[in-house]
Image (cartoon, rainbow, N blue to C red; front, side):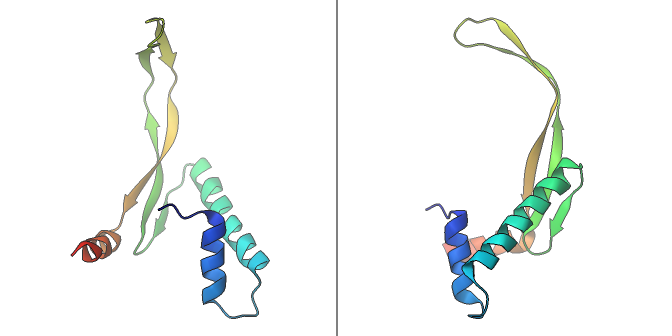
Length: 98
């Protein structure tokens, strides 16, 4: 099952006090996502205790092959996002499987 941002907003709205509107919750969720993106773009690390660490990793340049033409293609270096789950998150996932 996949949880969308709209479903996440709906779940949060149902769990908080009735004086917070769905629109406000949606703005907060979007601000959270935007701040994560900005922080990662700056090359910084995000650590959320009990959840995990978001970071970027530099991938080295490499030469790949176009599968259709078999010609070599240069792939430039690039930054990719990586996530490492915390021990608490891993432990909570294991409890659900027992």
